[in-house]
Image (cartoon, rainbow, N blue to C red; front, side, top):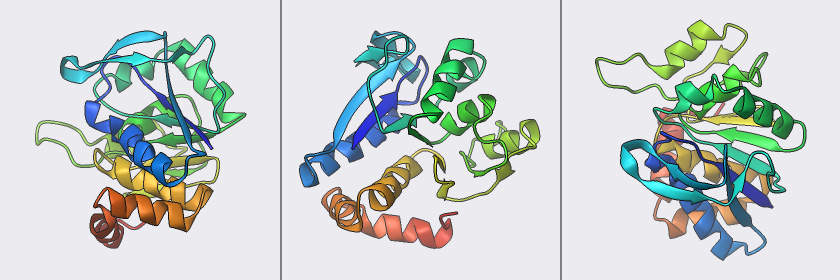
Length: 204
């Protein structure tokens, strides 16, 4: 299965844990492939200055089965970028979309969560508004749920920050197989945390 991670200016570095989980999963199942895409190929500056290199730009995207959209402070700009929204809509027609954290807000801005259940980041600093609340208020056509993962078939949304790990493990389990997901969780020493998170924040 071919996975692609969408990168953008101001994305939160911790959401690159999606790539990290897939990197370990590829050791379990070498048929897994991973690449990256961004509004433009080349250097992308993430939140707080980390620079990464995107393999492809959205004008000439790679082939993929699953597109992963992360979150971070830069989500607000991406949610208003016509080129990004058009790319996501086109991608939804040919692949499964997975959001983690406030990446769900970008999918909502593209209209891809309308009529569906979805989740996003909920825990924030006292001075901030929870993105889950923002999703509910700004996109009334979306049924918001506080959960670790919400799976609507063609679109999977994940909760905030480290729940990106749970989200990718869920995708591995449901799209590739239980053995691959379980062995990946064990190898990254996350099996107990995954089980505990599901008990507190069930998957929708």
